[in-house]
Image (cartoon, rainbow over all chains, first blue to last red; front, side, top):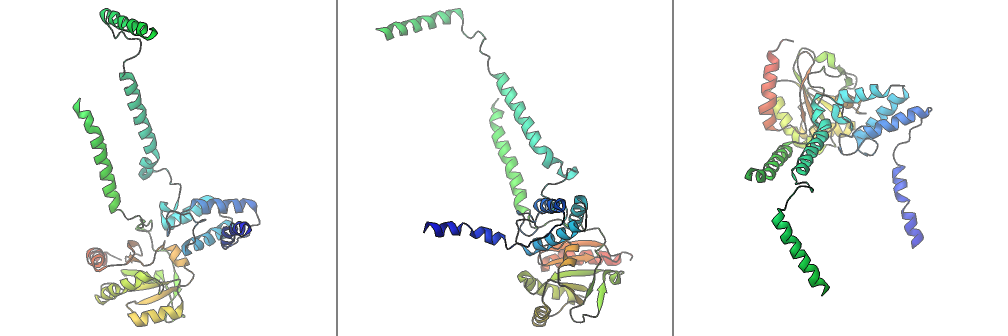
Length: 154
Length: 178
């Protein structure tokens, strides 16, 4: 039983092997191919990259990417080719440009607002060394505390 | 001092605003970078006469539509009646791009549903589709007299889209100089 279950663990490996195999003569090209298909989005199933997607279009685009890599195209050339057809949306890492300023800057702006709110909140709290009791109140407090201590001892 | 208690409410309203806008956005609708750019070149055989090839350049000088379809595409079937009605208006020729289809299936599909296309171009391996940035069939492009893509409809064309988007645009484009 246990052995059968262990064999079942191998099933995903077999399924993964169904994805087409590409041969590269140059390890640099293979690295480029892998980094490209992991950075380019599949437009059919939009939350997957080309590497993970089983969609037909993703398969075609992997093939195109492979052809271009083997033809010696640079990363920029291949990315430009994709963007010319599918727009910036095809990139999982959007470029920094005017319409993406909010996307890139937003988290920092929110962080700064948080820091400002936090600093103001801390400043507004009374600091510890300020005199909060009058002389009269202090005496009363001491008297009460003294009573308590005596009571506790008894 | 009381007004500070209104801050969460204000933030809440801002978030509601963003969410309301987000609800109306369709994430499947990716703006095409090809709008305003020259239609990508193709030279493809037609479905009914493989010897006859049609190239983008031949279509210069007229306003035309490219409707991407396939017999395996379910929403194309729904769209097809709308395309037929549009073609009957004789406003602009509709060219089909038969995307990644089998010849026999494609012909049978047109025979049973009717053929509104001036010609259907055969893109068996889908490479023309990739050049045109097609990612979900059906898609429809409007190309002007200069060969510039002016509009793209992603997903099935409806009678409303024909009435509100295509007809006014095509009428305008037909008045432009070629």
